[in-house]
Image (cartoon, rainbow, N blue to C red; front, side, top):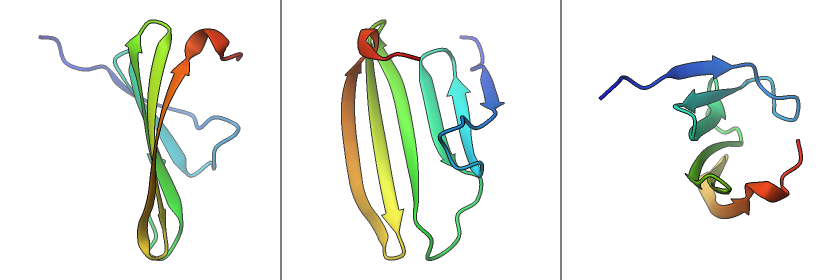
Length: 82
């Protein structure tokens, strides 16, 4: 088994510049803050391709009290315009 290819990319224009986008292989990505400050809101997201045209996303949100929400989405990538 080969080692995973890990790369940090520049944050996209719609994210806070303090967030990293970590790509593992070609079908998994993780978005998370570079640092987490106590009492500050933040989110972390995981995207994975389960089929060539089907993306699943999990988004976990936190506020000053801690974990608040987990959202799971399934997206047809044929419908996403870049």
